[in-house]
Length: 448
Ligand code: SF4
Image (cartoon, rainbow, N blue to C red):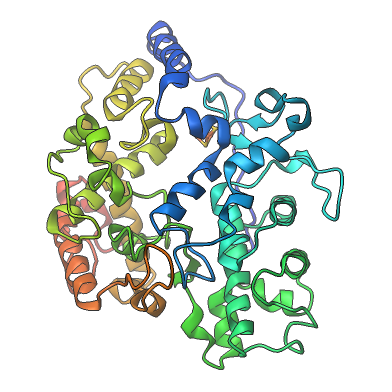
């Protein structure tokens, strides 16, 4: 989009969509509202996605110091509970459940945050919502910053100027590491001190990136292009996949993410597949749902077994289907218990009237979408050569419970081979085979 000077695509319609069975749809929708409080995602609803900060700290999967560590001592100051108790709109009067929680269109969960700060160094306008877990991580633990007001200000700036807070925060954390390793000087940063934990510099830099001022202009291109421009060995600090900065879920611990981040057609994405704990330690909570996807055996923690790769691929297909249906993973994903895979089928039946539609058929919708994206990339010259794991992930984590955990190069290469094979893609090139495309009714794409 950037190469075409395209900022956004807006689609507006005036007609209301028709629904095969309004009554059935309403019944399904009411069920969700009635059962939310007793569900697995009641905490997500109340405390937002940043509720997971604590569990990620405990499991050593909270990326800190630009992905050099899986733990951050200051995590409690920036987690979802602290946000709920202190800066969510209405918190001072105990009205934050009503005033500080927002929603995507018509969602009963309302996990989105609205923060308001009127005192202190950083005033934050509630108009721009509030930080998600990804944002508290990239501007917080990635940079070793434990200042929730500063993080909320950076979030406000990102939302105001239409910047992605993952890429922006992670690019800043790359600069912090380069500075702390002596590869960048105050002269490079226009006088900004990027010592780990410096919140003021982080906020200033976010603003300068948005306005493309000075050093901010270099970072506005993202960390990969900035590293190329600056050189001096700063490429070693990158955590990018296809030029896109990694989100806050750790592939050195959740190892199937190493495969999905690497092969995903549009770069690293934490919402493109189910994460490993669902089929590892948390397996007993999700047995029924995972059985729908064909998984009945718990897998070893931090393994990259063939079954784990199959789990990554099958859940990726399901997530791709959810994207196609405009459904949220927190509500329908196999490891988020409100609705689940079978309810997704029921919703499609209620809306379309296609009574014979099955889960398997919907899985194929997601698979078709992924194959189309891979073919689009192939046409543009992007194939397995672009599926590259950042070098940093082959260096061990430091500190806490995940100290020393690291990806093994040979194991990852073997897992990638297995993934392409399971997908029906050519193992050498990573491009979907003609046979696979024809199986998916996509034969028309061959040679386009
Ligand atoms: S659709 Fe998903 S992200 Fe949006 S408010 Fe509902 S649960 Fe949260």
